[in-house]
Image (cartoon, rainbow over all chains, first blue to last red; front, side, top):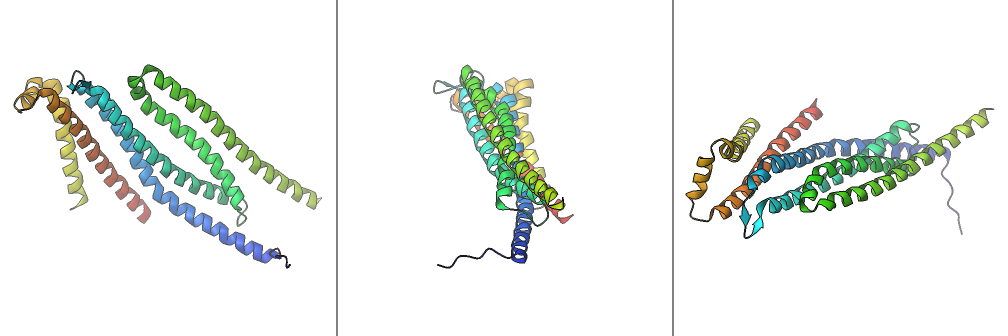
Length: 195
Length: 80
């Protein structure tokens, strides 16, 4: 049985350089394409919240549709709309964060020495932090409407977000600490070689 | 159609929509109710449909305006 030979040093350098260029180029393209849709999504959810909360729900007070109060029907419609917009934003943010992680790996790491594991660690860390920020902001949009459906609903969702947020931050810290450990091991190795 | 004309048209629709629901209802409630009284259906049904259509119109027009502006902005940034 023939064993696969490990790539010689020039071969390894060439492949890592190709990977570095690929990650750099793709990340920039993805970031540029995802920012406009994130902006439109954010504007759309804020407008929906503003129009709903300040104009149309006050207008709907006292109107009933086949026995159902219109403010609650509108609240439900606005909640569904907000959920759709927030999900779209999350999908785009995921793409943007992956691109940012690729760029961060290229900028922070040694030039032409980026590995998929390193990119994955940055992805996990950035996704975790940005998801926590976005979900917390989204909760501010939802909380009023949730409280209108049932006063306890807003509190229950908040508790769930806090628990999930702690878990995400723990994952992000774990990913970053792995990278720090890898870098410190590399630096220690180099320092020992020099001595 | 030119971008400026599109934006002006959408803004006019949004302004008309918000004027009817915000300005008329607050400052001219008699005229606001007159519109619903003059239609043959019950006021509650008319108002429900009007409010939902009003919300959808406001949202769609505002979204289209922001979409047009953001896309143009990023296109010009890419060129620059």
